Image (cartoon, rainbow, N blue to C red; front, side):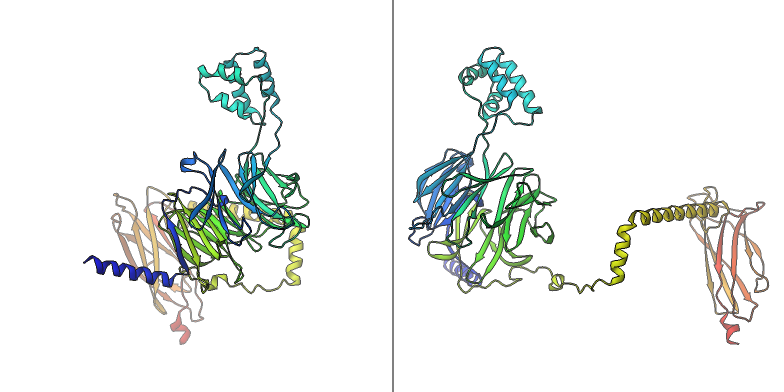
Length: 592
């Protein structure tokens, strides 16, 4: 019985692979790779045409950071790192042959550069000036003028109020127990205070040519809210730019020596746009939630947010579209199929899906056995279009895009209707529209004041009319709690005789009403009623009583008038409520 079941599952798997655009090249759930998209890079590190995968591995629980280089499904080399990696990138740093790319790995305050997988250069971020108050406190501790407990109290006060952050030495001291403080002070009081920032993100920027094999500069984002551009040969700082917040994602287009645009997604929930000549942001895109990814597709910035949505923006901050995701976005990256000129966005979701979008059109959905935490697409080995994924459990998934695969809009799941993306035929601006716009700009304040004045007058007149209606009982609903009544009138007939039905209701909860009169006021030259007033029987709470009478139209000129219905209490002149009935034209007399 087991054999047929196995054959059926194999047939189902073969059928799903035939319908898929991807080939399952490798899946190892025990690969022990824990990283994110910024720490993955593909490059021909030896110049032999065989592209390798560079991984900045955090290690299990972030305790054993390592640099791994994979060739196919196997680990080629592996080396330990002093601190957790922040980003990995490959770039060309020289013009002469052989033109093999170098590997840059950002970790802590340093960038480690490798050539041919051997250490080549180490760039350290420049030190920052220490807090002068902190420096003075450590100088006093060096001369034994203050005890460790006083030093701790004063450092805590500086940390809460000072604009300049404390050094690592002071932060470590504040974490110690009381018995460990004196030994720490004796060990470090003779050392100089050093304040060092760390790298949060890194990417590359072409230096003077847009060719694929052109030299590139490294662009670093630091915890000190700065962006640094490094020279690829001397590793000196070519440019320094300031940001209002700490950058976490970078996207750059252009060349450093010509013109470039840089988009930095920061921790304050904003995306800042900088250009070559600007030391500070030129544009700012304010997001409604924190960004979880930033990808540039042609001239559009695609941002993933913690509100489970993708947004498309121009470089000037104009929102183009928004797509809602079925689950939280964990990571994003670019899918570029050079043979077909396709650029799309890959988004890994918390429900185990990889969704591929071109603008807001869904192209493909890939389902994985585990939640994906990092994505990388490009040439791997000798295959041009390879998708590499690492999972939350440390697994490695490699898929190859079929050479016959063609992405079609709507190829994943049903998205928005095509009519939603159709542009409206907006008419051209007329001369009258332009003149009116100029008038509103010039006299906007006066127009607003006039509008407010008219609005206040309207509210005043409405309030006065309402008060007058309450005082004179000119409403079909009683305003007094002692006589809660409701009146509704219906006119039936074509004329000259009409049937007038009054529906009178006692709206109180438990108290009946007795001793009411109904009185009619009308033009006796136009209408005649059998009786101008009559008594109302006892009104039981909650019931609607129909009171009927007939109205005779006396005019043969085809005109009509209003009949006023008043409900009064016996012995009182002021009505409890009233209704104005607009009588219809008598069609019988008009036809005659």
